[in-house]
Every structure is written in C-alpha cells, then in structure tokens.
Length: 91
Image 1 (tube, helix red, strand yellow):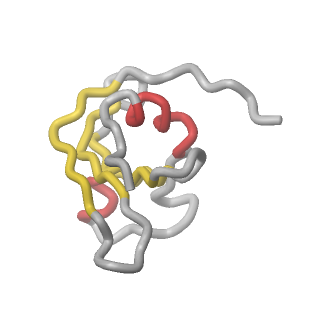
Image 2 (cartoon, one colour):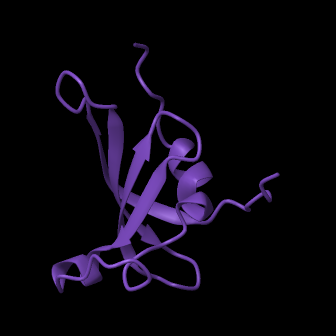
C-alpha cells in the first residue's frame, strides 16, 4: 500500500503536452519551482498512468548531472500537484 503524500506548493512557469510521436506514451512536461523548503527550479515529466512522474533539478541538469541520487527527486511527492494543473487529452 502506498502512503498518502501531501501535495506540495509549486509555481508552474510553463507546461506542454508531448504526444511522443506515433508509438510512445504521451506526457506533459513542466518547468516549475518548488516553493517549499527546497526552493528549486525543476523539470517534471508526467505520464498519463498514475505513479509515472519524474522530477529533475534544472540547475543540476545544467551542470550535467543526471545521475541517480545526485539529481533525482521523488516524483510521488510532486505528482498530485502537477496532475492538478492539467488534464490529459482523451485518446
């Protein structure tokens, strides 16, 4: 059973929908600030299926860091806040 995560306060700067060409799973991509304790700018990738959310720190990406545990955020912490901002198009 998954623990319920309290939605975080975020400020979304931009959001776009990517259909991922003809065979990939579509997703939304966000540029947002975590306005909580971390206060960082992030990029979030959110797929239609629940529990499919990736979040990376933009400053660390800019520095070339993509490694697990060096630039990885818990997507489940941000997922409900990001999902509240969009609606996936009907297939």
